[in-house]
Length: 594
Image (cartoon, rainbow, N blue to C red; front, side, top):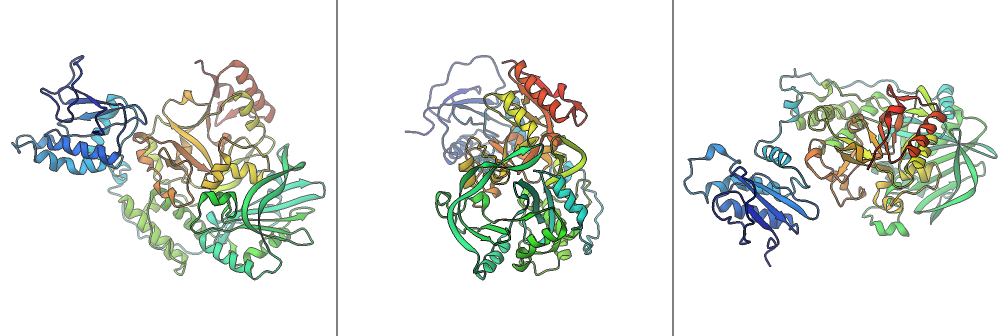
């Protein structure tokens, strides 16, 4: 059976359509004669549809764009708009249109545009395909940007001092903790330090994720330590609870699978746990031998203390220094390299030096990375963009309520190219999060505890809450458990939580088409949808690493009833939040009638 036999075509052009033998439906209202509407009952494979488009082109019709629904859908085919200038040049319509159609049909067969849409959107998409959107350089008006000398950055002193003041900040940051910024083979140069409170006193924790090179060094060091044991088991850990922003051990115990991992525990209470990276990892292995993708490369160290002091932190760093994973405290060069690595992944640019073994000097690596990213964007120097900023950002501190002027948690960076798209294509779009069932109580609980959304690994592994999401265990196996899941919508009143546009600036976001389901363990992160294509691509989900803070990003809360609204406003009142980014919470929390 012809794969398009279930499609019926309504031709608005004079004469019968050549695309299919299906009888045309009766014409309704008069429309422009360069439009054909195809209603599809079953969406064919993209390759088959591409072949059909090429056949259509050979039949003398010039196709500019198509739209497909994810189930029952519509295909809107625009005719005679691909190359108006070609009219009159070729008297044989079967040849010239086919030649002009070939590159467009190829782009369409690769899934250029999917999803139900309006005629206006289809026409806009058609224009994009006929005349591609301007480059980043043109959008940002940077074609005439003066070329800089791209000087090699000089080495500088560490950006942090591991002194008593910093240790007091760790202890005062409660569950949120502080990032210890280090130089070496640690992702984002960050080891998160936080304190747990138990019956015997304080327990200081450090957690970070190692790079591939860091994994090799750590495993080599572990193999030479006879006191380190290898285990294949569930992790047994005390369930924690939040008490006025502090993590306290409870009487219950949590068990969850961690697969193969290495442990060290000495008589003084010092502990180390490391989950190695697994080449050729298969998610089903995470049910048994292999650690789940979301914890591979994760190292955690802990030490009982009477109080947090520099000596205790240095004691926790000893294994990381001995293995060569940590070389010292991070300098501005280390952080700029981490920033450029983030941007390279976000833009899908494979820079030549960032993937090298680190033999080149850091300053030269930064220079090369800037040049590669500048070339990819078509501008002289990315470092001269107004949004270029290697200094990491942190969430506003939320420990038993907001702590104005203080920050904590994991580091994050904003993209230096995103504001251009937010001002144009994405100005009406927002990232949202849906809360299902008992919405008022669930949002109120978020406000009272962490003040935002936390990923599965934060909730389960670090905060020890045991609270699971819809597919938490599957997310651990796919790698998505290190991310918070949101949706991209231009009808924000349809979601429970709506976040402001600043969230779309973050460099750790990954926009996936349908069917990815948070899968990042095998390089699927590289299949992310470009930010500039978000508005014309069916984005199933946008993932953001670790957390989304209400104080930094919340723009609107939509609830189904007045009772739900009362619960949420009461929670804001209890933690002392009267406004967010200058807007009273009474204006943010709304009741949306069905």
